[in-house]
Image 1 (cartoon, helix red, strand yellow):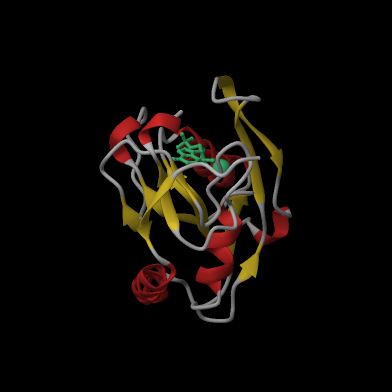
Image 2 (image 1 turned 90 degrees about the vertical axis):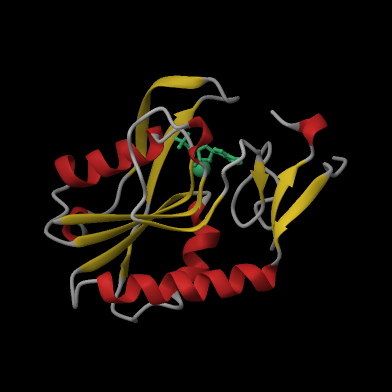
Length: 181
Ligand code: IMP
Ligand code: MG
């Protein structure tokens, strides 16, 4: 597969600085115990691996997977949870919900509803690597983010994929215009 043309928005060093700053803002907001980090699979895994190592070492780790897109980028009717955390690690806990990007908001809205209403989380703190408000469909905001990108760009790297690839890029990049989807 030929590599797509892309432009670096943040390099690894800039991301490192922003991750430390984000962790410093989050640490005082975390409860003393009963905190469970829940990255949304698979995009948030790279973000989570970097972030949790900068946070106090009392966190539990669980995973949630939500399908919002079918094979392409055609939205499914309803977002579908197809991997859920262990209930005993969510009920009554403060959940630090992590996602790669907050775009339309459909994934985050379903994740929050599921963790609160179906799994009994005491509190859900939602943090994303990228806040991209340009295409928001729902009135939802993250509690914090590593970076906000105002332009409607298609981003890759640091967990974000284009056709399943580029998740392992250490930089945050935008696809060049001719390959935007
Ligand atoms: P939502 O539209 O806020 O529900 O975001 C759903 C998912 O769309 C994200 O978790 C990503 O997997 C994907 N997505 C949205 N924007 C981008 C992007 O710019 N690059 C790569 N994936 C994206
Ligand atoms: Mg994703």
